[in-house]
Each structure stands twice: as C-alpha cells, then as structure tokens.
Image 1 (cartoon, rainbow, N blue to C red):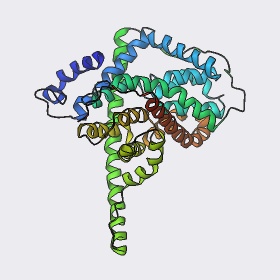
Image 2 (image 1 turned 180 degrees about the vertical axis):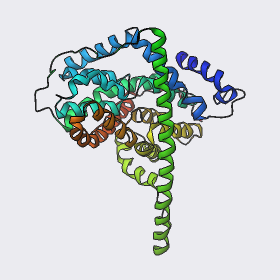
Image 3 (image 1 turned 120 degrees about the vertical axis):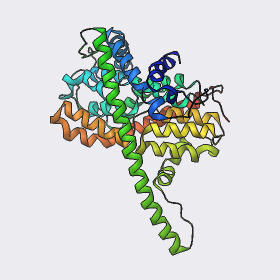
Image 4 (image 1 turned 90 degrees about the vertical axis):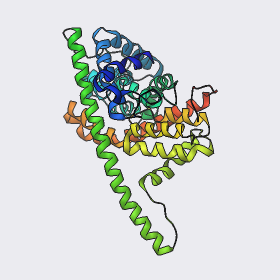
Length: 366
C-alpha cells in the first residue's frame, strides 16, 4: 500500500482536490479519471525502471524455470506466461523470435495467459478502486495474478493438448528485452507507455459502456413489447442475460446462494465492459452492504482479476498478429478459445480462493 500511496503524490500535485480519494477530508467522491487512471502512468514507469535495473528480468526468469520444470511446457510458453504475470500485451515481445514456429497449443497458451492475468501497471489501479472498502485487497490481487498464470496454462492444455514438438521444449530461454540507454530514458518510456494505456482504457470504457447502454435500451424495448403481448412484466437487459449465463459458474466457485445473483451480474458484466467496471460495481456493492458474506467478495476479487473480456480479445489477437502476420489466421481462430479458457482459469482461481478462505480478509462490510 506504500507504493500505491506514493502514486498519489504526482496525481494530487496535478489535479489538486479532485485527486483526494473517498473517505478523506475534502474528497469530491470517487472520480475514476482523476483518482485511479493516472496511477497507471506511475506504475508503468516503475515497472520500466525495474526492468532497466534487471530486477524484472531475473524475476521472470525464475518463474519461467519453475513452469518448465513443474508443468513440462516449452521454454517459450513458460517465458511468456511468466512475463504475463507482470506485463500486458507487450509481454509477447519476450518471445517474438519464437512466435513464427510455435505450435497451435503454444499459441493458445500465449493468448490465454495474456487474457487471464493482469499487468502490474494496472494492479495498483484496481487497488485504488477497492481499497476504501477492501483495505487488504492488494495482497489478494497479487496472489490472483500469480495463480492465474499456471491456471491459464492448465486450461489451455486441456482444451488444446500438445501434439507436436515445440522448438524450445524443456529449455529455459532468455528474456528478449531492449533496454533504455539510462534510467531517465527508462522512466520516460514507462510514463509514455502509461499515458497510452490510460487513453486506451478510458476510450474503451466510454465506447463499450455507451454501446452496452444502447443495446440495453433495444433489449428493454423488446422486453416491453413481449410484456404487452403476454400481459406480464419482462425484465430484459444484456446484464440480466449475462447474469443468468454466469450464475451456474458463480455457484460452482463456491459463492453462497444469497450472494450468487449479485456476483454473477458483475462477472457477466466483465465479459463486455472490462474488469474496471466490474471492480467499480463490486466496491459499490460492498459499500452499500448488498453482499452478505465476505467469502463472496474474496471469490469475486480473484475471479475478476484478468483481461478475460471482449475488448481484450481484440487487443491480444490484434497485437500478437502484428508481431507475426503469417500466423494471423491461426491466432484469430484461437482467440475465442483463449477468451473461453481465460474465463475458466479465472473461475478456477476464484474457486481456489474460496476453498482456502478462512476469514479476516480485511473487508469493511457495511
């Protein structure tokens, strides 16, 4: 939390009172654009700095070695999966020289681990959203990010088992990374990357939430017509439809029956409106006391911790295809499978969190 608090120094300097978080004197309430999104710039710069001094490279190499030895996957898969724990789409650059020769099973692992995990640069962003009602959330999000990588590998290999012979099978390969010339350049590069991420996330939220509202109005109108014909009230919306679809998965994760409906709704919302909106709604549900059990919140926190949604599908398929254009057809076919697999990986992680939950998670339940 000390690192998160440090990120507020620059935000407060730039935006003044607008940056004061909820619960503190003078706060205007929670404003996503001024209190949470700018933190991504700080964390992106921090990650670039850690890369420059060699810390991240060594950490990723340790995880890659563990995945190769324990899970028996190729070095390229292991390296990319390890990088996904800390990075976003840019993690695919670590295995760019190997993408052309990867088997379809390897490509599915690359896409699934990318969509099932979250970048460290946005982890602090989620902490800021949830911390006012869930002070201990940082530890849970870090745990989720680490657990999701092996879960994504597991689900990928179940869906598409390896039938070929990967080029880097049994090998631990080095991180492909171009270092900045000095510390200042590294910080500048990280901050610039953070700005692009902030703009992209903001644009996606505006576009997708607006489009969802438009679709919802159309579905609601159809529901009204059906209600008039049959003389009954029909509550129809895209959120309601997704809530019913994800309800069985929510129960399977171990969410108590009393909270299953509310949790299913925000999990369904994630698939179309990104995890940002879902975490915001989770924080609101906690604050308003609409979730009865702490276990439900912990499970939801883990289950939502990933880029497993349609906007991310476009980003990862498009981004990976740009690195290896000759595999565009394979990548586009595997994209939908990766979306499915990444969601299942998130649900498995949520179930594991619920299984080992013993209370005392640090929630401020109202």
